[in-house]
Image (tube, rainbow, N blue to C red):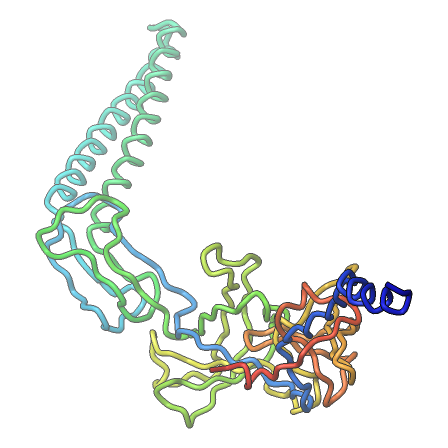
Length: 360
């Protein structure tokens, strides 16, 4: 076999030994969002419950059996008005016994005083010794002290006669009653609850992501759910210093400054904070999933014209349930990745998939 024929034989063998060329992996699909127009600053609006600022629970100061209840839930009462009464038979007897003890102690004190006066006359005539007068004077002091003690106890018994009447300590409306005639109660048991209707406020739960927008003494406006036409003015009176452990929200109380008869306890009210804020450009609203952090800086992945991922540092504004505002670092029309941003690398080629195209 000549050399020419040998070359034709080896050529196929050499071709068979060459490794096939590896094809680059296809671009990874990336869910993207095209940055649109800037979002506007919107005043925060939250829903709360109309509550009284002052609400007190009242009960009897002594034990006893209720014989009369003079009010019902919803009744308006004045300060000092009788709400309920206890059976006063035992307290009357105790007061009578205390007064009898006072009279007995007064008689003993008067007798001791008379003895001292008589002994002073006798000692001037040298009929008795000085020590005998000292004894009588000591007996007078003891009788006087006992009279003061028994008188104080009698005053306590007299006060207990007044404690058989439960009176309102403030003007307001009855919101709860937990006792009925015939019921035996102990001192301090909750009998009625009175809400002061002169100062009414709205209790709100502000998410921790937006508590920075609430300032003490700030002006707000509010509407009742039952009346969407009337606008009331209010002021932030109290901000809880700590979040509720269950809801992670801060309780905020807003005082209604011009409440009328239409505002009733338990109603639902919508409170609008920062009502003076104009609709100004605030930033681009993007999903929170598009935001990541690199070396302590907030970043997003921008997909350039060559469909390559590029990391870019941005400045963020307020966070909310619908996303986060980007105050600087993005331009209208740019494409950003909004899913799987923690797995992207610089210059990685991706296949952009618009958010609405990926939805079924």
